[in-house]
Length: 139
Image 1 (cartoon, one colour):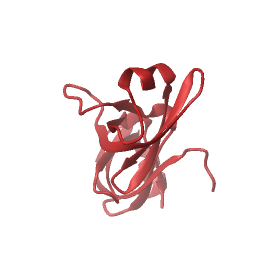
Image 2 (spheres, rainbow, N blue to C red):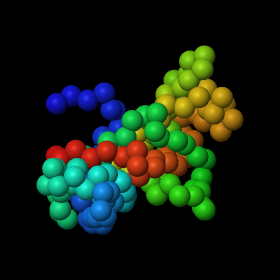
Image 3 (cartoon, rainbow, N blue to C red):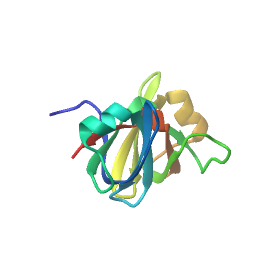
Image 4 (cartoon, rainbow, N blue to C red):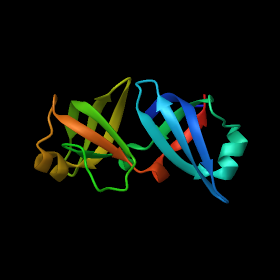
């Protein structure tokens, strides 16, 4: 199956916490980062997820935010440090590629944000992804 989602990070399920309807799934990415996904309990069951399951973490580029440093006091669980590898700007929007340990992420952000954060190749950043915006695919 081909997907338009550019951000696909391989990993292994390390923990699942199930509720009545939703579950949180912690994944250890191949680069060593822990990524949390909030998915339905039904998805956990239909994918056959368990500790040790191989998965792909999926996040649309429009759901990836960037910060110039770590952010404390924030509910976003997934904060992945990395380095900008390229910036492609248009009149209104920009595509920023970020190398994180073991993977590359793409963030679709406004050109104003690129300018305000002074993002350029080599800039250190933290990619932020809400756990509710992370999807999982069985590997």
